[in-house]
Image 1: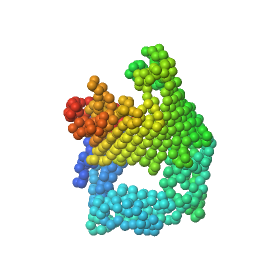
Image 2 (image 1 turned 135 degrees about the horizontal axis):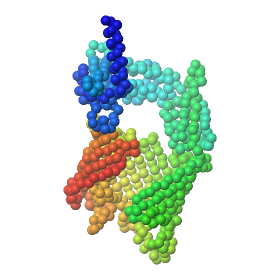
Image 3 (image 1 turned 90 degrees about the horizontal axis):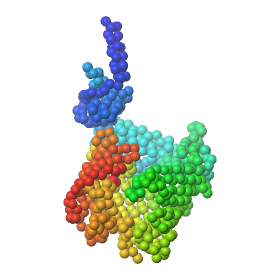
Image 4 (image 1 turned 30 degrees about the horizontal axis):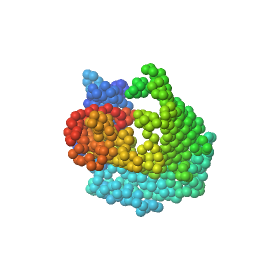
Length: 618
């Protein structure tokens, strides 16, 4: 009998393995033993998913039992309990075939155990950096009476090591212990820190250099022999080298020849291996586009560049042409550009880009003149601590019209809307977003100033001031609150009585005030044509939330308007709209469809508008 029972158990085990190898569909998930968290919360965190028609259509692999299903399920449930202080939680998962269709029933049994709370947090050991504010910040994360979270403790352990590694102690030993032996549910946590010895950088050897001078590499390095060892200097050096655009990949690794030799250990050498890009490059771009007047047009551009021009500078020549096709085969315009970049302007890591562009103009069958334009510009950028960027520049433009008399030249300029533009500009950006496409935390601040004309010359004189601030934060589990405040002011001076129509603000549409057509909000002519605003005020509030898979939804309110002067600004003429949206998070960014309704206010009728576009409004 005993032999028969063993044989039966082995047979059933083989049958179940064969059944599981077919990846059966999960019909039902049953949770047992849980008293702290409801079934719905546990199921939301599982890798397993109960099958339904939507998951079947999307071919969601999680609706079937996979090789990794059990491991991922138990890991997710353990994370939920451990991060809430249940340090002794035990999880058992099983898969059972259902009768008739042989689909799977998933059973998860949970032995929750005791919940522990933080007691005293202690820091001991030979800590050479004790008393630093970084350690106080780390320790203060753990408030007495909060549930013990071992994952947060591991992060704190890593952060303590990082503080040491960034201050000359890369060999620091850090460990923590949780004391659960007390009679109550409080657990003391002790961090044991051993700083070890102070370390300085040794020699650095560069390999893989063929096309670019090694002095350019040293210029980007933030440490040299004898400097105090800091891990952040290594990371910053790697980022700066990649940002030069000279290298495809690079590897900076520590080389300790003999760990028993104190000098090598405390003065580690490094090898920097570089994989360079070719010094010359060629790029060709072409494509069709729709023109509102010419129907189908075709663009073609070709560029040639050299990355090591005059040692470290980059130069690029570009030719661009546009043709009208099918309706009438002819050349519409062509232009030529040269761009020179100096990566270290005035001895600072502040790239300066000089650009010259020339457009000879094209004669056509309907005009007997040719418009020639040329421009030069200079732009420099300074980045401080990655998040803060300053950009300033200058642009000078000239236009010549050939084929008409001097008397007729001014009339031609007006008919064609030609305006010579010369300007100085400055912008400041602070980008603290974790993700630029789908921001879930952080903020974005932008300030801009432009000075056009005046002592620079040109046809118009005016200045522009603009600012915006966006904030992203968690509003509810899974929900993101996105807020934006934006304003702009443009004003003429000197010989200009007004700001040119093309340089005014035009708002309304998918990215400003939804519920209106593009550029349809603000001052208008007697015929109802938008004439542009000199002042804009915009406020946007949006709540974004996940729906299923890569689909998100949103609820939003947009408030704002455009005005010709400050006297027109009143609360009762601010446009107000509200609505709903749905987004698909594609690799290129969110593709969104918004439905917005306008609220009737002074001078604005109620109504609605759909908007379909890519990327979030802000």
